[in-house]
Amino acid sequence: FRPFWDTYHTIDERYAGGEVDREALIQGAIRGMIDSLEDPYSSYLTSDQYRSSLQGISGQFEGIGAEIATQASDGTQGCSTLGPTCRLVIIAPIGGSPAEKAGLLPGDLVLATDGVPLDGLTVDAARERMRGPKDTPVELSIQRGADSPFDLTVVRDIIQEREVESRELVDGRVAYLHLEGFSDQAAADFAAAVKGHVDAGRRMFIVDLRGNPGGYVTAARAVASQFMAAGVVFWEEDAQGGVIPTEAMPGGYATDGSIRAVVLIDRGSASASEIVAAALHDS
Image (cartoon, rainbow, N blue to C red):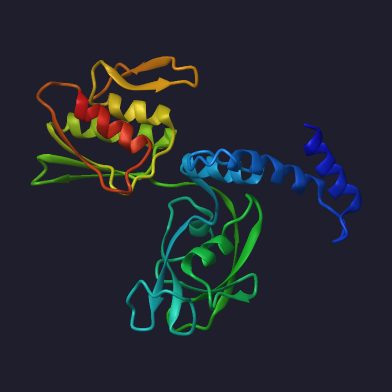
């Protein structure tokens, strides 16, 4: 380790470009160790990045809780850069969210955040403006219909995203379940939706995992177990070559042999989605 410490102390004591952030230096060294593996599946996250990653996997985020999109002057959605002819529009506040409690309505246009216009931003950049730590306020400049713009303060909170869409098709004979993530809440909501369809007498299921990037492996096991009465859902292999099987959980609601299921995947179905698709295919 002597070359490492020699380098560290040289930078700390002799760097001529200004004061050195020692924490950033250490973080960079750690990142460099991981990058030297040249493994696309290994990366280093700072504590803030890790916290943000966990929130994403858990289906949660800190913000105002509203579905947003861009809207052109003619009312069509999907314009790219915000400006006079492309505005940020509230599609719908999430039920029980700070946005709903503050009085935001579908169709409201967001012109600025904390007094700074959104012009020139993408929808993702505008979304980041509205997100932030729980219990912190953000002031939105709102245009509602032909009324004059007004300011609305929304206090951010932790928002649980809706990850399960459930409906019936073909005159109520087919159950359709679209899963957008694999958080623990998503697994519980998925189980409840499956039970509802089975109780209603449906024996044909479409499980839509298209575009689902994955999440917790425990949630993958729970989702697959809704259709698997027994058997291995997946195997884990450790660095020493040991293989550990993970069995299906008992109590799945759609394990009856008369039930048929189709799983939809695409190139955006990754991680836990692949585990569930493979487990159901093989079983």
